[in-house]
Image (cartoon, rainbow, N blue to C red; front, side, top):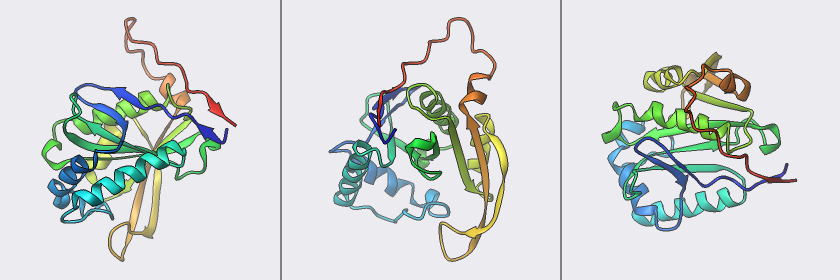
Length: 209
């Protein structure tokens, strides 16, 4: 499997997950500007002000990489898709698509933080990733000091696999300890049943290779 016709859309509880598209730049810029103080300790790309043109350039790059199956950055939009609530993604940091492994990344904009949206989004990413996508393992990594990120991982049932000590920090010139969590598809399918009326997962995408 060298190419993936990646799924495009997932409707969650009060949000929509979808690939960024042309014209989403202003929404990304607004969310980034509002959330700078919230993001700057952890996200190397955070800037005090993201011009709309820069936001539009980014979403076009995200879209291009999505279509090329080189990386899958996903917007977390409000149900009417008029507001960006955050961003997520399936990142190929553990190897190419052929490995069946990806790392989930996520940020929630500052005004939406602390309302339970983060765990709902990560749970949706797990549900979507292990049904419509071909992932066999989904990882979550964060700075050991990022307690909010660790709480999200634990609330979503991701398993703690250890700590990578003394890695280069993502922000600044120091070092960090990286907390590592993951879940396999086997783990996900073995979780307690959600009830007889649960909606069956969608069919898996068809890869080319």
